[in-house]
Image: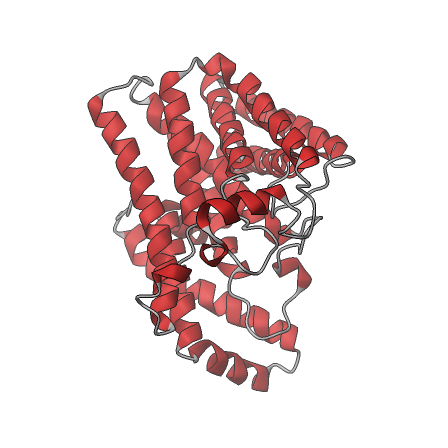
Length: 359
């Protein structure tokens, strides 16, 4: 039963990473709106991929630390610290690699501090420390406290202001790290310091769902618990959105609840299809390729994306596709699909030989 459950998790993780690569690599000026992040308030399908990954990471953290009986020891502490630092450092390296390709390798004054990998690092480290330090019965109260505190912070700090000079979230990052070290395509850095608080709560929801999974005695009970949890979270998020609109850039509490709810529902459905109905493993190969080496393939995609863009390979390939496919939106999508398939080709030999690169 354990292997089947983990297979479901690997498939959802694979779907998530696959979509992360797809939506990050549209080409040209014409990209389908569903493959772009919402500019501010609101949510597109594209806005689901990163929160899904954090939710899954929360579950995986529970399952991993459960093997140590959630006990502090030097080896476990070292492993957590090492992985947290490594993930953050890889994120910094990706940002530096972008500068390198622009011929600005020593321009550390404009090196962005935050990013996707950095947020993953912070959430992993924080949730792991919680898992080893606090009674797990306090998980839900802690999640509620973090989200309520952040909601109050948003209301008092102009958190929804589309202006970095008025938005306290932006001002915290600007004053602590400097404007030159932040993301410049949004009023706030979407992976900045203040919004890491709800992202940690987000990962804790995944952690709590991992606990629900471990406590369930049968697959049917697992499916029921995840579907129920998903429905409750979506309802809470929907009701909260009337006062606190969905917003990925600031990682609003309503966004946390709805995306976690949808992730839990998707995992419940996959458990039903894979574990209860017994879908052939061979039919899941494509997503298992991404799901068994998720962060490695994501990092490779970021580096290759920067390389393709800086060397004009992306522009040339898109131009060739557009010459064949008149519709610029479709040509952009085909480019993104080909780029994603490239990573499937990179990951397949690793999956076939059971080589798992853990970051």
